[in-house]
Image 1: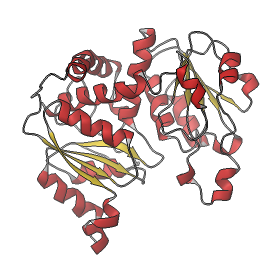
Image 2: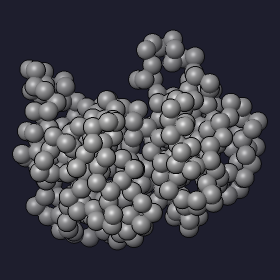
Image 3: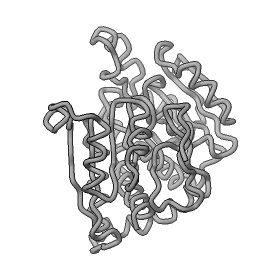
Length: 326
């Protein structure tokens, strides 16, 4: 079923059927699959907002196995499981206190938690770790909650939904990405997601040292998406539909000194937003932010990162878990 020639093995395409499938990469999705998922989201929103009892996955146990720090993704998945009637086993930083400390391998850890659960949601610092875990776990699906600088597919699904909710489409969009293109797994996944739709133009604003790797840049171009790399804010298109700001990822740098050379070079304050964005632009951020958007911007109606975007995370993950586990 899987080849072995890349960090992301050729996992099964969704092909309209999510049931029991690993969710490892945006490569698995088509426009049709995303529409099927998005059609479920309003039902999930109603369950969450009205606090209506739900037994969609009653009796199911989901392991949250997070080797990297997380609050939003971890909390969102935990909430999503419980909103639709499931239960969670929550393992944060297993490398610090579990049998891993005693020398247990990653492979054995996955096999152990597979035996306890109906699905494993995994975050790990190594690219390809979710792919590896999905090959090890023969009986339950694995969902990628972020693998190093690789991908974060469920973040992209909620991001795409947030854009769709605002504009009613996912094609013919002008999108500005800013910050860390090199290490930003949310950026990598969202480019793949937007590449599924025609006539999207993506502008990538970053320091030269944080551009996409040339290999990734070439790979994305091969998907048919139009990419324009920027180094100056003066080149920001004034007609952008979406701004997708990202933090400079301190944990990806070898030294604090290297990090400090790159941090907070592109900061959105109210004046910056008013100067370069249009009245209809939405400002998104996968969070956490670390100074790259000032708090005063939060009240601007264009800023959706602490409003619809964060809430959509729970609803979209509820919908995904429903489709995979029901």
